[in-house]
Image 1 (cartoon, rainbow, N blue to C red):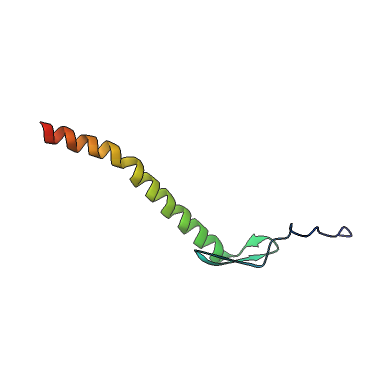
Image 2: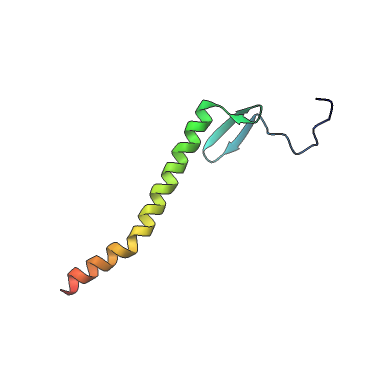
Length: 67
């Protein structure tokens, strides 16, 4: 490539996050980073499912309690 890459567009080789160090090669995550990100996504979806289920479960318990 003869066109220089503008500053701020490049993907860094490593990013520090609350999940740990995420490593990239040529802008693509390595296998360990991919696994970490998918594990985090699974955790977030599980928490979301739990939070969405709280209200219906509470209503069923209230109904049983009133009966």
